[in-house]
Length: 122
Image 1 (cartoon, helix red, strand yellow):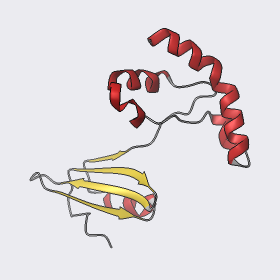
Image 2 (tube, helix red, strand yellow; image 1 turned 180 degrees about the vertical axis):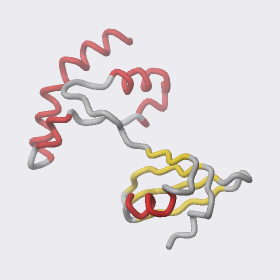
Image 3 (cartoon, one colour; image 1 turned 90 degrees about the vertical axis):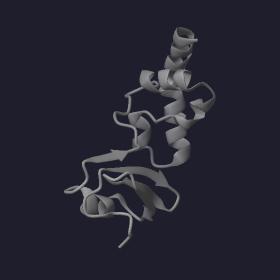
């Protein structure tokens, strides 16, 4: 069992990585620890009843088509760090059988809205 999860963490931050899930824990005294977990279920089992906050870096709400306005505006606010806001696929692309088809579906459904939003915020 990874040592990162203590008895009563204040907050647990979670982000996906190649090895699974990168976890940062902050305790009530200002201490921190980190570790990598193989799956989100293990993290949930260990912290869901004790952590005050579980902060997972995943997009919530995939669009039916187009790009989410919140992502476009976040990129504008972040300036040089805009690339840290990654694009999410449209919902229909997730139904594709392979990456190539998903990419094609996504490109077809987002290109019109991207042009519109770029004109709107630039």
